[in-house]
Length: 270
Image (cartoon, rainbow, N blue to C red):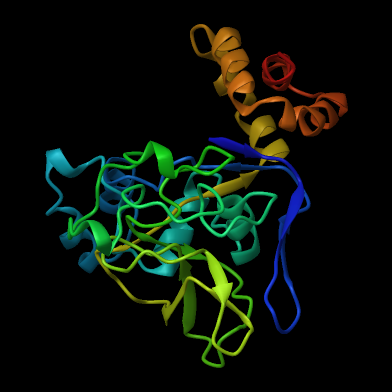
């Protein structure tokens, strides 16, 4: 999981109102898109759709590190909820992908080739999650451009048809595009796909998030019982960096703050 402290990214265009994207509370975000390995057992045991089961059963062992795909929006939400997580909103997703500086590419201000699995590479299939190290975001999340589209909640411009939903980020089957840009009319244009919420596609997947404080409190016993837990969590906090320290300090000051938060904070302060 990556830690995203509270903050905003302001997406600007020549015309119209800026889009303010952010999270008021610290978030934990899956660094990678949910993999086939993670999703397969849930889909076979918990999902009620024979159609989804038939897709999952075709996944071979050598592809289990690819991002999971072909789930509907409701199935993506159910998978997240069963793990104490949820799908990000559009504004949260864009903050995570563009960073606090509102950069137009997940990796920075300028386009770079061969750092994301998009149509330009002609792979015509997903790649194992996290393959493109140079394409990661400042928060340490991977594949927020390319590989598979990702389901999100709360479209900025809600479709007139309530059966439609949004996915963001592009895929191996779409061209490499900025996270946002100025459209021909001068207004903001997002790299978004509007589609039926019941859609299934081999290039449509999911990434989950959770409110950091609630998730850490819920999972504290599990995190603290792992062998070498303190050392591992201190290293994780150090990887998150000093930027997250103020948010962790606030959680640590709360009543009954779990020991795992103090270990993470110890690392973040290094």
